[in-house]
Length: 109
Length: 122
Image 1 (cartoon, chains in turn red, blue):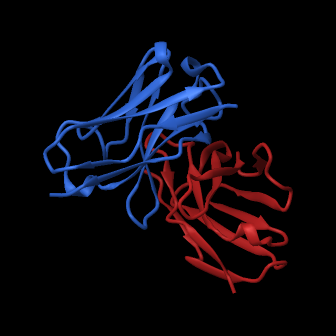
Image 2 (tube, chains in turn green, cyan):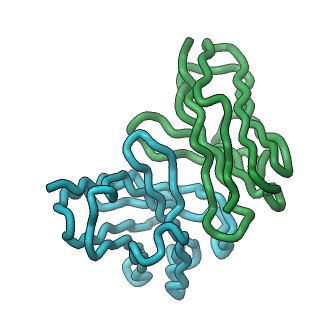
C-alpha cells in the first residue's frame, strides 16, 4: 500500500498570497495517477486536479498541479477567500486500495 | 445534472445492521465505477471499495474486506454499502463517488454524493 504524506499539516496565508502544498509518496506513483481534492467544512470533497497536472472541469486556472514519481505539488497562485479549506491528495495508480494523504488545512492568516 | 444522492443520516446501536444507498442520475450509471469512502470525525478519507454497477464486479480494500458489503442495482441506478453488525468505531461520514473514467478501475473521483452520517452509539 502506498502511503502519501502531505506537508505542511496547516498552512496559514493571506488572500492574494501563493500557496504551495506538498504530497510525497512512499513509492513511485505510476503514470502520474495522482489527484488533488478540496474539502470545505461540512461538504463533500471536490476534484481539483487529476493525472498530477490536469484541472478538472470548472476549476479556476489559479490551481495547478505538478510533479511525478514520488513528489507532487498543488499550487494556488493567488489565494481567494473561498480557497481556504482542507486539501487531500490521492493516488490511484497502484494495486488496491487507493490511498489518500492525511490532508493540509489552508487557513487564513 | 450529473449527481449522486445518498440516503439520510442514521443513528444505530452496536450490533445492528445497516444499508445506506447512493442513487445516480444524469449519466449512464451502469458504465461508471462507484467508490465508497469513509471519513471518521475530524479525520481524512479512507478508500473502502468500488463496484461496477453493470456487472456488480466489486473490489474491497483489505482494511474493510469482511466488514462491509458493497452492492448495486443497475435497474434503479443505485449502489449500496451495508454492515451486518455495526460497531461504535463505524461512526463516520460515508461518501459515494464516481470514477471520472467510466470503465477504468484506476481513476480519480469526479462526482461525489453529499455524504451519509452514520452514528453508532448505545
